[in-house]
Length: 282
Image 1 (cartoon, rainbow, N blue to C red):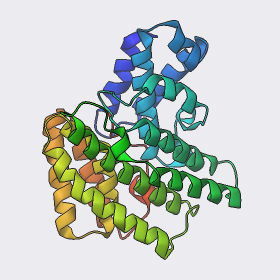
Image 2 (cartoon, rainbow, N blue to C red):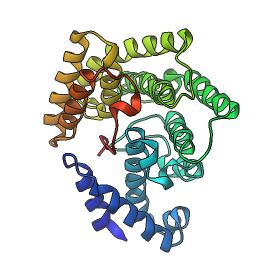
Image 3 (cartoon, one colour):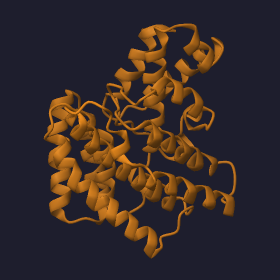
């Protein structure tokens, strides 16, 4: 299977609205299945581990900004947690520096969203959503900063940024499916994490070592900005434009176009914003 197909999938994902990257992804997953499955293939070769990890990160994060009915099924399964725990390790990966603790919550949220395509929403579904949110809230960025004093501030910013981003993804995406209620409690929580994220993003984008890693949190901020002031929207827009230059690809500008449409649509839901398969982490 090798690097060629992996590069094809990633290349397609970096292009402006192109849905055929999903077909390439599905082909890659079929090849992995034929070779014995994710765990078997990952253990068969050290060379393949980073390629498989890159592919899985792409699928997991793409599912966050894709309607549940269009999810890539293998990357919305809870079985993925074990292999990702092993492959992702400490969360030091070039395209994503999300703490592993929180990435596992992203997989759980994706799974909960995907389940709604084939099963009714029950009290167990709602209880599971509440447990995931409690787990996110319990995350301590200070405990994730590592031992390198030179990088401590960077890690702290990343940990705080991802905690608020994942909390917002949890609440907003599950409210869109009526799993989480639109109550005062959750509205207040969204406001707190939204305000925190808008404050953290400019700090992250000013730091040369980590500024190119802000794309997914910026995407979350852009969706939340539907309820924010024109000034906040302008800041999100500017940061996406700067990030496009840093990353050398049009993906952030695609996000900007999605938000401009969404902000003026009169709609406010997660799945109304991301109404087709988008991938912003490449």
